[in-house]
Length: 392
Image (cartoon, rainbow, N blue to C red; front, side, top):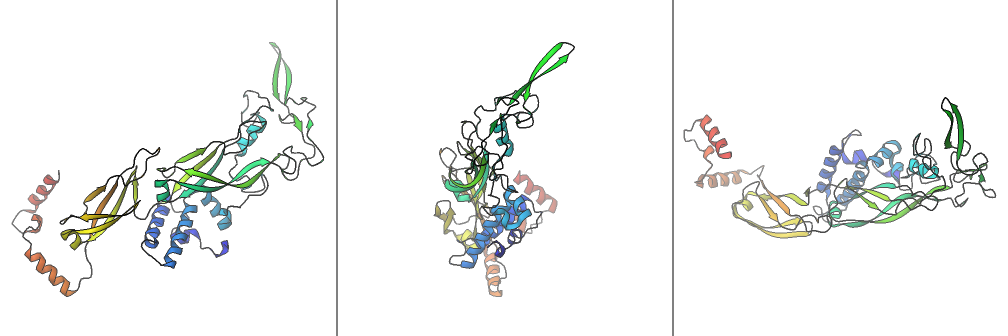
């Protein structure tokens, strides 16, 4: 079905080199235009809203975006590259090859510990590597918390060789050079006498065993990556670009070591109406001139649904009112923030002649016009100084 999808950059109306802020701004504009709440019963708007969500989920994630730029829609398919361990791009999925080799070889030489590091027993228990993955959630899901099913590639023992790395009918042999220790002793004459050092066995690369006939499925590693689905609880109040750790959700340990962790990086889609400020929420609400002047009953959108509010007569443009406890749940469940609503008074455009005449008649009846709108002989310079003095 990927061939039927529109280009994600085209969907959001941005160039391929667009910045994160440009992508976010473009998505928010489309989300506001096609949001189901503003287009009830409009199937076309709903489809475009979902298309924009899908495009943003990929282009806001640096890893998915890189795969999409290189491979197109196939690169962000959940099953992309989920074949054998190390089988081409994406074969390792979210697996950190350096962590795996470090845990397998115990930090010898270039595999984890660096040159001159402490020599370790290659058969000692090693903690499994950490799996890193990303998830995109909605603004409401971040505010209230949610459960997400995340697809990851997890390392397991090769089913073909049961983790030995050797082909069926064969088995790893003990290295004769180091007698299975993974280390060899070397002596060197110096002006101070004979120096004895221990270093990684050159024949078995510190593993203590040699595989003469490697398993074809895992290529002698004894491991394969396999796509798995994991349910993750995302706490209420989490913010964009924050991460959470799932203990024991990573790759299995080596030689009986503990399982690694799963690290989930969270991306939060921007909301078409709400802006987050810590645990508070801000939004703008448009009213007509008549509503602002006369007052009216408004129904303000909140994270809990619409709330009734009596707009006072004489409300000025830009006035802000607060709904206490209508904001975002704080992490740890210690209360909620507030919601702040800024009133935007819409000035009517394209008035008819009759409407213009009515407004002029109304304006002529006003006695409390703004002072800077009355020709009372005040010098322009004085007027400006007076205004800024009052402002200060």
